[in-house]
Image (tube, rainbow, N blue to C red; front, side):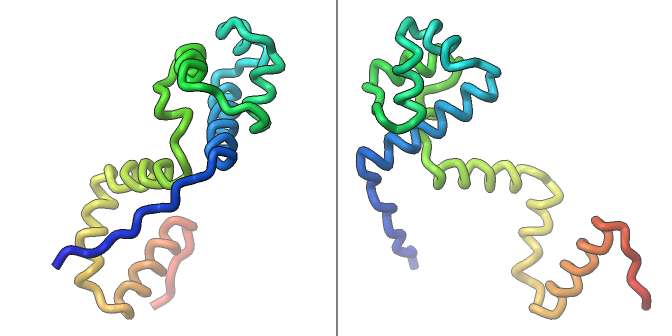
Amino acid sequence: MPQLVSSPPVPSSSEAGLQVAGQVREIRRLRHLSQRQLAGRMQVPRTYISKIENGKAIPTLGSLERLALALDVDVCQLVRDSRSRREEEIAAIFADPFVAEVAELLPRLVQFHRTLFLGAVKDTATGRRRSA
């Protein structure tokens, strides 16, 4: 039987602007660019970059394309929300063959065995030894 999935609420333009603002700031910093350098690449005033990053200006589609080009990213990276970032992080985690194999076996474990397994993993990861 198919499960019903509710669609996420559509963000308002101000919420969308804040998501873009955070993405632009984060990517610019990861690229070790100042606002002035990014503005130079886009051939816009530095204050325009500041307004975008502070959510006071929402870039047009054309400006988003120029921002993406200047930051050397795809436009989608500038407008992705926390849900899509989380989905990408989950996909990256499950791409690990060990994690994928463990995840496949977990539904077969009762809660008691899950607790033992988690405890053993924690102990191994922290270097502690369990006494018998």
